[in-house]
Amino acid sequence: METFISFRTIFFVITMTPKDEEKNREIPISLRGIESILLALQHKLKKPASIRQISELSNLSMRVTKNILLQLEILRQVERVVDKGQILPKWQLTRLGRNIVSAMETGSDQKPVIQPFLGISERLLKNISNPKSIEELNAKIGATHHNGLNLLNGIRLSLSKSMGICYDRDRTQYAECLGNIIKTLMNLKTNFSTLRSNPNAYYSLQKKGRKPISARAKKEFLAEILFINQIILNQLNFILELQIEVSRHLEYENYSIVREFLYDFIDQTRLLTYLLQKRRTVDDGIHIFTDIEIKSLLKNNFSKALLEKITPRFENDDESKILHFAMQVKSFTLADILSEFKWDQSKLTKIAELLESMTKTGILQHSKTHLQGEKWFIVM
Image 1 (tube, rainbow, N blue to C red):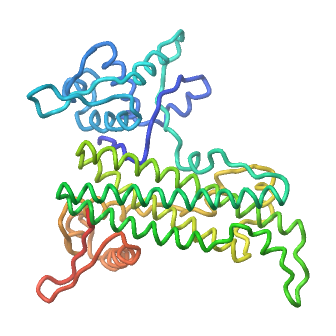
Image 2 (image 1 turned 135 degrees about the vertical axis):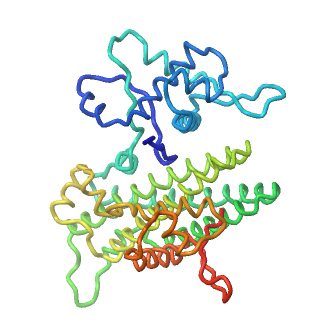
Image 3 (image 1 turned 60 degrees about the horizontal axis):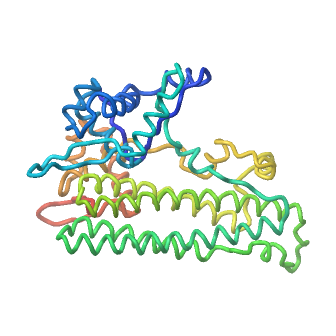
């Protein structure tokens, strides 16, 4: 069975060291094919080549070859060119791609290996740090709050321009999908703006009938808030990258790729919504983390276990299947879903509840008529 490389996962090339050997055994064969493709373009083809040519030389199926090329295009390691009078594009290495191949081969008899580029834990925990003093913690909370609002506003404005482009090109389905995403981002901005950007002032207030909060307790709340704020900021920067790719591929009218990125956009926006809900909990003066975990935050020991406390524990596989199916059809019924995935009647109630949940969160839209009954669809 071929491994499909999601647009949510991006890869890059590094040189393998002995410590990486164990990780290497976990890497799917299709990901190791990236090395084969880069080397084939550099040494065997030496000029723009079709997917079929690259597939044959790299000993990969055309489907896997195409998916890998799309990932490398995102990383700007390959690019498409179209010969005069031809419709189908060919692929060639960019300057960055050639440099990467050279780096792979420079003075080492160790084999290069493909590793994931920043998995979700690494991405969300990237460049996070908590200062030591209450004043510095509070100031950094204000800065991350301000930057988060600016990012949300910038992403929304850029998507509005993309929506206009879609309307101009008579791609109303994409425009409507972007419109729904924009509405979600506007709601998120409103919710985020109501959170305290100066929580120290709030915790310093003397409340009638209560003892003043200690400096230690203030610091613990501030460390927790700042940690979540920085996670949110990293997630917003990732969503910004998705927005840039949506705009870029719209410019070149690569609509099939745009659709994949829009799916990612919906998925990542849901994660952002979840993070903001967790942030509001701490803003109300309730700790999410235990005393031991808060000590880790204060010591700048940020583990995956801490991240799991504020992110969904698992991804609903059934939901992912339904979303991919919804992107391929105009509309569907509950019976269509059961038939498509060969699910029996025992899952009827569970899938019906899942469809209702996906509708409430704005992922799907629902209609009900006397003649056609209940139908769901995703605006793409």
